[in-house]
Length: 242
Length: 242
Image 1 (cartoon, rainbow over the protein chains, first blue to last red):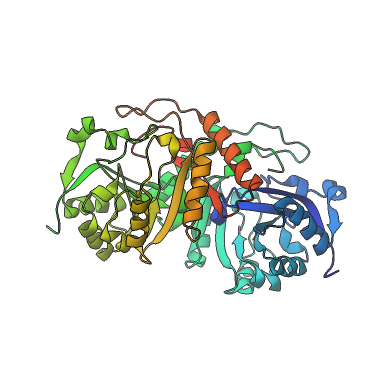
Image 2 (cartoon, chains in turn blue, cyan):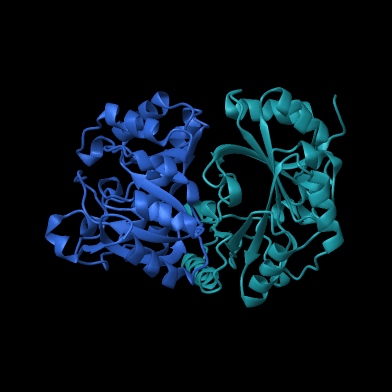
């Protein structure tokens, strides 16, 4: 045993990363359970809502890596650590164990909790939550996350944008960290309920928002921003485990 | 005048790059007219079919940059040189002129014609055409393109995949250039006719092919490949100039 157990909601793949800096790249997801946020439009409530806590399995780093190995055929690829907020979990030993086997690690978090082991990641995506989420950003905590990562991983920002207030927030985030790449992602206002995955999503609504977002960055000449939808939502709708 | 005139089919943007390595990034497109290929499923026949030659304007590098400046508000961004096959055109002086004004240059070509000025690009996408295109790859020419670029730009490969034969071709391309990143792109079998842009595309067909492609790379454990659709087709269908 190389560490405390990790609360795991699901492990699946290989599939492609559907969002952000690694979009389109094959990966295996390790989704942890539990979150310090509760965003209005959360699309992974099954890994957030404590009603589902009984479905989150405590696993050792060894047990997690064994399952990833089974899915990957032991051919290393990038493991995407997601949640919930994976920063809550003691992931340092898993990262260490996996990297020794040749895996790379990407982690996405809202940036509300900094950990020393952020420095060991290959890619860190900080995705602070805009006004439409109903959450309040603790800018000091976000700064601590950027600092904890240091020059270890490639650190990038990602902001979900539903409306003008969210867009203004994204610009503010970018102004605070001009040297970090920023990804803008149109929000999905028809997220899956936590206990099902067959709800239809409003594809046209997402595409409208995508066109609007592209228009905004073009109009504002904000050429440093990258605008990308959630590819997995376009491909599989709200289906989980893909 | 800093060079011979360039045959231009269209200049438009800022919009986002819809494909490959720069997906989601704001860019202005300069599409040149004329092509040494005639792919079965060509989606830019208005820049390929010589029937449309009268719509291709001969422009000086200065005139092109002036129009790009107008679109970009003189705030530099990446200029995407596309076609047709842009390698046919004398683009060296335009690249030189634009870079002095702070622009970056990305170029996509099938790799049938190598030019010295490839070395001056920021990103070179070589997109050799698979069997379904009806074209034959001249591997020697492709190698000359890779060599011409040298360590100048970031060079990446992109292969459109319609079926198993195309997929096998993509694997062959990757085997020839193991150090170059490779992007797989599901084909659009309902491309726009050259004289219209309101034809419906078969979105479900593209998404079926996307799911199939992701399944293939996962099954073959081909984790170096990146699988991405044509985002602009999903967002705007076959509409031109976006």
